[in-house]
Figure 1: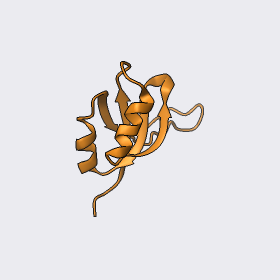
Figure 2: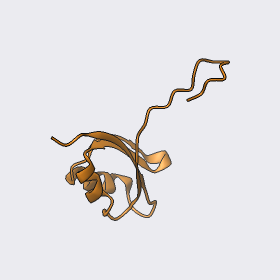
Figure 3: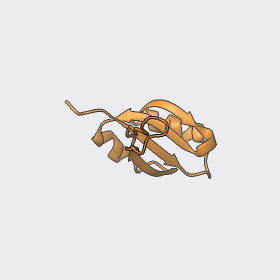
Figure 4: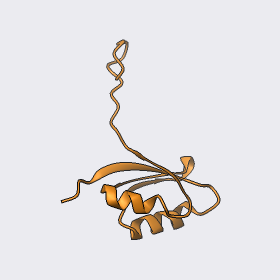
Length: 79
């Protein structure tokens, strides 16, 4: 069974983000958020699906969505 991971998809601004989200969903992305203000869509998919998503017109970049720990306030510990 393929491992599902979280992804951040950066899109171009020359098309509707909602249209691109529809195409991504049709190709297998489980959409979590459409972030119109910053031109990104977050979602979940396996590696095979992500390779297909890279070829959709309007997709600029696809990167893993990783958790980042900032540490407690006032701490020098950041990652």
